[in-house]
Length: 165
View: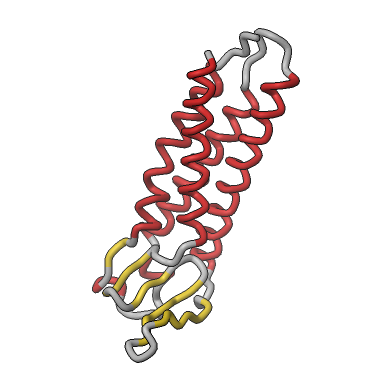
């Protein structure tokens, strides 16, 4: 039982870390090695100083939707972990972790919605930048996409987990 709790906690913390990185780091869309865009900034690397120069993105409704959904995903996953810890110590024997599981699954669904919106509306989101057809998805988008099944699986595990001691 202890090994199962450790594995679920590691899975949860790993997916939460990946969510944080994908929300805050700057690589949702990459044009080349010297220009990237994320949910918050458009950045390019200055060849002279070898530093990144960033400007705030021009917000539109689609970008604000992706931003809000990713932040919600991080919030629900964080709440889910804190509630899990609280339930672990306060719940009576035989109790199920339903609320924790539903929060984690909801984090997965909001992350999934954010990835879908960005994938299908990237032309509108990146319209004020360069031509989106000349770029590719960055590693933060990939991390967010990988988080979807991890969050849903951990949510399912929480729903079926029963407190033994």
